[in-house]
Image (cartoon, rainbow, N blue to C red; front, side, top):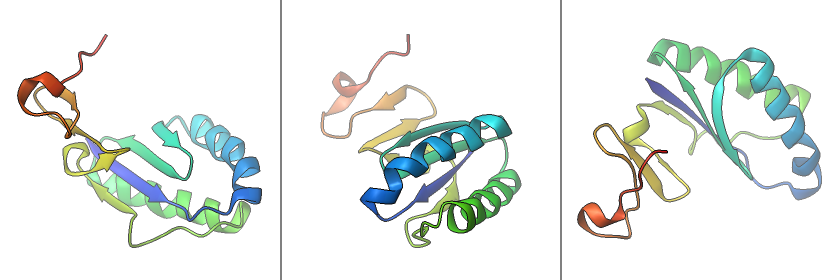
Length: 110
């Protein structure tokens, strides 16, 4: 599984309206995603699919929503190689809080 991570600089007035449109677009395309404020992770099955999704969603964000995509913070990578809101996804034990040491920081998946 690969993650397509997009980051848009905060443009508060336009971003509030655009969030709903971006969510609808991702849902219509059938993507699995997590979005919070200006950060968005889209989960796809392969790196090649991640590159395709990154290109098409970046185009959607820049052309339709008139927002900028921060290319320096955006990437296609495996979920365990990226952090989202300070958390990373590990292949063995699920989500892990990096602020806590050892196994005490792990959360159970319900």
